Length: 292
Ligand code: FES
Image (cartoon, rainbow, N blue to C red):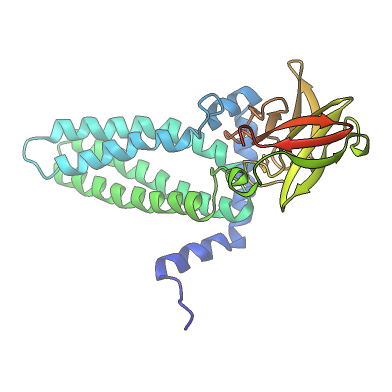
C-alpha cells in the first residue's frame, strides 16, 4: 500500500509547486541581486571565505537567544535578562537574513518558493519579537511574553522550512560529495591526449562518473563535472583566467573553480570541486582520485 506524506509534508510540497509565488520570487530576487554587489560582497555573504555556508552558522544567534528568552520568561524576576536576549536575537537576525537572501537568490524555483515562505515566517518572527520588546519597555510584561511566544512559533515554522530546504531540497549541500565513493580506485584511462580539444572544457565519463577535462597544450586538468552548488554540468561552462590561474565558471549561477586544485574562487558554492590527479603515458591520459 503506498505511504502518503504526512500532512505537514503535503503542505510543504504544495509550497514547492506554488507557481503563483513566482512573481513575488522574481521581484524579490531582482531587488536582492541589485542590492548585493559587488561579487566580493556576495562571496563574503555566501561564506566562500569560511569554506562553508555562512547562513546556517548565523541562524544559531537569533534562534538560540530567542529560545533562551522563552525559558527565562517562565522564571520569576528575569524580565530584564529575557529582554536582553530578545534584543540580541533581533540584532543577530539582520545579518542572518542578509546571508540567507544571498544564498536564496541563486537557487532553483521550487527552492526559492520554499525559501520565500521561510523568510516570510522569519520576518514575522522578527516583527513579533520587536513588538514584544516595545511592550516590555512600556511595562506590559504579559503582552510582551505572549508576543515573544508567538515569535517563537513563527521562527519554528521558518526553521522547519529551512531544514526542508537543506535536507530535502539539498540547497547548500555539496552536490559532488559522492564522487569519491563512486569513482573506481587507481589510475583510469581517460583517452588520447590528441583527442582532447585544446583550451575548451569537455566531458568524459568513467564508470558512470562524469569528469570535466580542460586541456591546455600538454597539460590536462580534471575535476568532477557536477557543480558542487546545484549539479550543473561544468563542461557546459566557460574557461577563464583569474589572478593568473585557469578557472572554470559554472553555466548556471557562476560559481568559479580553480582548475589546479578545484578550490572555490567565487560562490554561490562554498564546496570545492573534487580534483583528479593526471598523468600522460605514451600519449594516453590517465586520471585517479588523489591517494587512491
Ligand atoms: S549549479 Fe549553481 S553555480 Fe553551479
